[in-house]
Image (tube, rainbow over the protein chains, first blue to last red):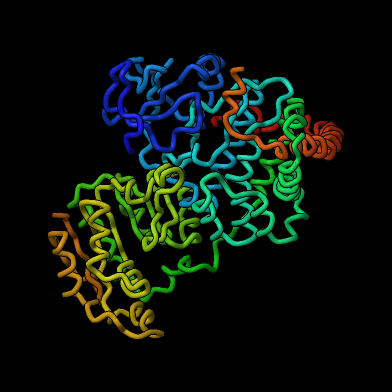
Length: 473
Length: 60
């Protein structure tokens, strides 16, 4: 968080730093003060906010864990003198972004948004925005974090956020399911969602045969293009009316379109990796017990598992009572992990898609609206198993730079070094020149001690690999 | 106008107009589906009027 609005002379409020992603809505904003996250509600939104709380809808959504809960805070905690109310939302441990989610996570976030909208419509309310950034994963389940998103449904009013929903959720999901799952990265290029004309162009022609995609993406994109050039469109659009029953039907149709999109996580990079490794069972057992023992020494409560694959070691870490972010470059591996986490109903592992050689940058306004991954680092420990050789050899990252990044992420690291004699490394080197003379066990130790103290070092049984426990200096 | 302020995102003229058209189009098959469901629902309900072991309160 950067201090964009640090103080207000009128109230003398101090040390309030406005969330750089919270500036669009004139109704209020999120800020941090004394290390606590608050949301301030200003004059334009206060009447709706009060009515929303009194409606019973807020209470129901919070009880169902669809909307984040909050406590009232005294007005003197406000960031500025314009505050009419201040609340303290329940904290979310890690803020993740849609371009880091798996297909299933984005789909579940979309369905949550529509379910909330349906529940709101039934109660005479509506969502006045539907951005994917309003959803976060808490206990590995999606939850709406913008308590100020609700407005009373005016008779005959269409859904203001229909376009935003399609750009933030439907277009990327359709592209992931029907064109290529990697297209979720378009969300990183465009923080306002994927333009529908672009989505329509990238989707295969046969998606026009799907009634939902035909309607909400293709015809929707066509209508946007047609009315964008029409000077009278504004007054026509302001005059449109839709009765509530039809609005509900539209949202239900959107829901079945989203729910009907399927993607099968098979055949991509690493999903089958665990089965392809040359690891003997004894080595797997040895590796597991080393990870457990080393993690126990760190006292870590939160862990980032880098290169988590489908989450075998994330589970080891989580089973001991830690919360784990399970990052993997492969959308299929992360998706399989998410589906397993979801079916087990566990809340201590959140799979995310990440290329560590190209981590999420800061994006949006001033490059800071959505924070970079490094800016969000805060785990007690990282684990990096069967990862170092991929970055050092496949991606040409020198070991000192690699360990520098690890050390920036967390004070503790459990790292598996995979030497050149290992069959997996031999495979990586089979098709290219070995330009890595420094990639040795000694080279790894030398790179490690620049940033870390080597607390422990143990060979993994029946393999040539070595497990390190490192503590940042 | 309070609610003009609160509609702080651009809904897009085309998006507003198409949503009204789509809602009307979608309503047509939904109407027929509901009619069919109602008719088959009546016959199905007749078939299953015997109370079953599933009836009664259930823990969610």
